[in-house]
Amino acid sequence: MEAENLLAIFLNHHRGSVVEHELPSAFDAILVRLWEAGRAAWPGLDVGAGLFIRHLAERTPPDIDLARALAEVHAADLYLACACAHGLKGAVERFEASYAPTIAAFVRLIDGSPSFGDEVRQVLREKLFVHRNGELPKIAGYSGRGPLSSWVGVAAQRCGLSLVRGNGARDHTGDHQLIEALPAGADPELDYLKIRYRTEFREAFHAALAALTQRERVILRLHLVSGMSHEKIGVLYKVNQSTVSRWIAKSRETIAGEVQRHLHERLGVSRSDIGSLADLVASQLDLSLARWLGEERG
Image (cartoon, rainbow, N blue to C red):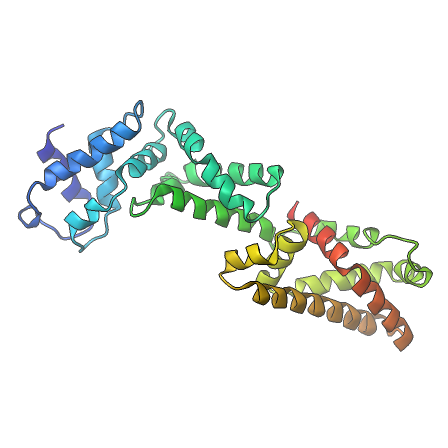
């Protein structure tokens, strides 16, 4: 394709108000070099020059220094994203082969289990590459302004965190496992209370967890279900380790207090029983939370 034709394609599809005589010299040659750089990086993926330049133009911000903007484009990355967005044969497979380690590295910060990694990859594949309602898939949102590896890593991390949050609208069908998770035999009085207040305790625990903020629920799940350290959670939320420790401690206190309050209001139990129930909550809180939050995610 002639360079002047690529220039016309760029101008026709760019959102800015640039006209040809305002462009820097050899601008058409810049477009050709970007396409050739992408093609050289991904041999066998035949993205036409016209399609690539249109894709580039539609993702180049308006009213900026075009020469500088194009000099900063990651041409090889944008070429691959263009191929995936437009469904070129073999493009998605090449993408996954190249970025699987990146996705795995970001997802391991949330949950290192192989099953969770597989789940994130499946969901991410659908989000990035499946066309919906006649629109291009999400991979088309990559503009080439930064490395594709960083863009993919952030997308994978967001996907993983979304899975960890467990779809708040989902019915909490796993809450019946809470009481069953509490081992018997350690204290006869607590075993008695566990049986006597089985239904009420389950309901109280459910209500207490529902009262937490979304962030509190996510952080508890990361720590208790995924086994993530306070330090790694701090990296995700850009806070120090002591802040994470305070968040988790506050959530525990909130849950324990809410469970006791709910039981007192629901049952009108005596002060002595409330004290014993408090012991039951405190002794098994982390185990119960881990079981409940794990069931919620699954």
